Image (cartoon, rainbow, N blue to C red):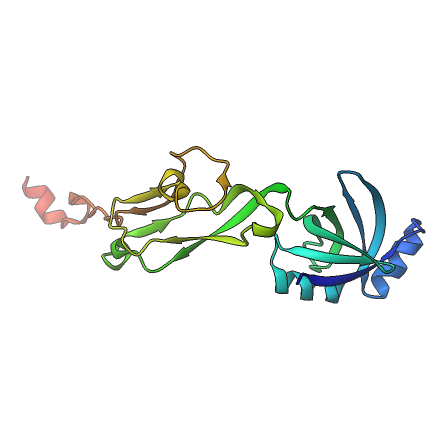
Length: 202
């Protein structure tokens, strides 16, 4: 059963109306999709965060607009960088059997063997573009790095076969690698600190 998020249709678009929305703990949004007429709505911010925490960034939400339900996914949202308030959100109406493409977070699991030997874990790819059915879309991709030694790496091709969805990256794109520890070079000796008497004897 999908998490339910209540919304109401938005009919006033003046700046004062947006200000009033935010003063009441709401924010403007839009829902659209194939064969679905775009609709302007507003949502309670607290309820929005509750539902996203429950289903995840890519989870299916049962959006109820004035009593009418529609399965949607959160397509995009804008957040105030200072206040962290939601400024606006876009919801995509979906058929659960259809496919969507979106970015999925990569989570590293375990402690790399090379890291215990002083190696440095480097992760160039924090998100991976994935295409999957709406009902099967993953919230994240877990990558076990516990067997990686210094000098080892994992690329997209190494995990492609173990995933039940399409990964939209080249096989040689590196997800994570274990770099050798940096060795600091000792400073070269110089005669700058020799006593004046020693220099005069030369």
